[in-house]
Image (tube, rainbow, N blue to C red; front, side, top):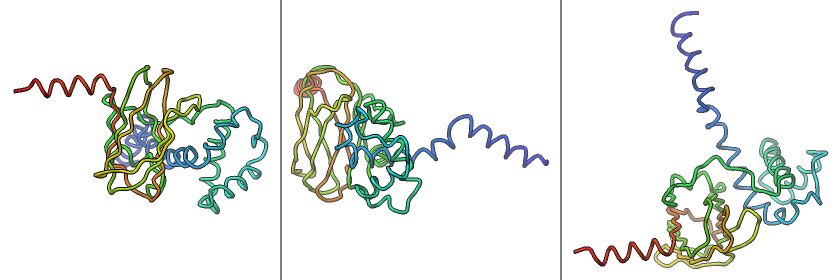
Length: 218
């Protein structure tokens, strides 16, 4: 083995151990999590007790998957990923974990949101992190004006926000209250496919403080 070959082997070993190869391979599975949580989870959130179990046969689950998500027809890898996610929800009564961290300022740009959209920007599913009790404001910036259904859901599948909003100036602002502290998730259903350029979640007292500081500036 010559020196170039040795360097190539070492580089591959480094990539494997640093997780960079895994990160590339993980992107399609992340897309499957988003598809499941926007298309399938709406029904299966109420069935996580295992009342309908597909644990015994992938074949039984695949026909069910294709019936409710036709795009999976002929795509065995996607069917198997959705099957894995379905079993996780039924077994854990939880959303399948996503590999994205929540920004410290709770502001997501278009590059950060892109992996959390289904193909064609039809739907979005975003883990928005842990919230203490309090009043908040959710702000969406869209590529164009559209009507959008917004779901804000707790990790126990309780809806905090469940309504349709029409954007104005390509923006949607949704005030909401968190009564039970915990982990929350955001589902976005545009009436027509539209790219979400920016998502921001602001705590109301922080928003008030920032506005007061602006007024005090000379």
